[in-house]
Image (cartoon, rainbow, N blue to C red; front, side):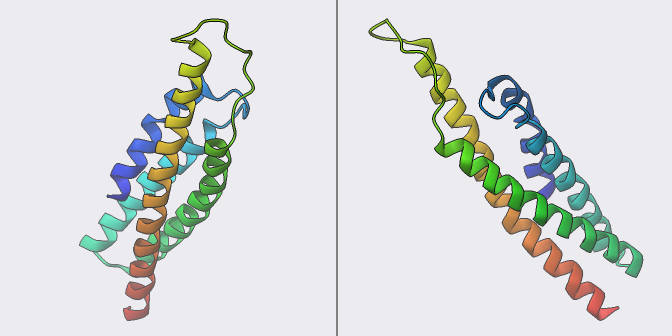
Length: 137
């Protein structure tokens, strides 16, 4: 599941790049969080199959990195979802492009926030599992 959530974050990097106006480099956050999640999930799967101490150490470190990244992402995505973009007023009565863009921006921020919360929970479980495995070995 961690790998899948990381891939969702990576896929949402593209619309985030095109829609982030107020935070210029916001697309870097889902790119980094998605990459770390995919790597951490891969190490988690590898340590489940062959639980060696070195592999469990790497899994624990990547899980902690994923936790830190998702916590930073949680703050950024919460800020992005709660701010409103300052766009010029629309002169049309219906179908205003600025309003459509605003709703698109809110939808992308909300999806990133949802996937980040899910990834945070899964990184907690993965880190706890790696720590428990290290205590056994």
